[in-house]
Length: 76
Image (cartoon, rainbow, N blue to C red; front, top):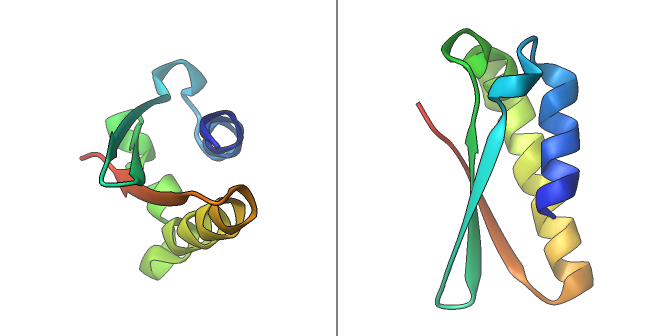
């Protein structure tokens, strides 16, 4: 999931070198935190949060397929 999320976020932002994703797992839920350059945060969130919502929906679908639960957060 981390590789898929990295690929998608890199396609959205201008500064691809600033993209990093950290993973934490607790209580069976893997939390993926997306870190991007400050001027690219809006591109990852999208208008009215639609891109962020789509990323979370995709994570839910992948998680159902793999039998895992994912939570995606976007760092400020």
